[in-house]
Length: 130
Image (cartoon, rainbow, N blue to C red; front, side, top):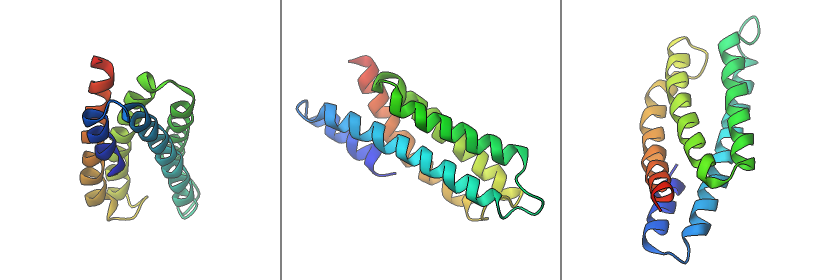
């Protein structure tokens, strides 16, 4: 999740590299969402009785958000990634309590996503206010 705050600092301090930092954050965010969608889908295979509706819905939402983040301009992709990561943090915390994901997700996801939100929030604000 550190590439997001790093991209924010680069965009804030270097107008020459700002575009590359925004594009890098967009591609990194889309890749993460697609990766997390695959992880979520893979975890559903270990669920006794097969995937549950919330597991499949989370997989589909993360996949669609990641795919859209690749297609949309950064102006819309960055907020989409931000919202998707926040939703994933909430979903993964609840899923860990229901033992649908590893238990450490309950404690790992909130601080992990907080780092991403800080960087993405700054980049989004910088991009939208420019």
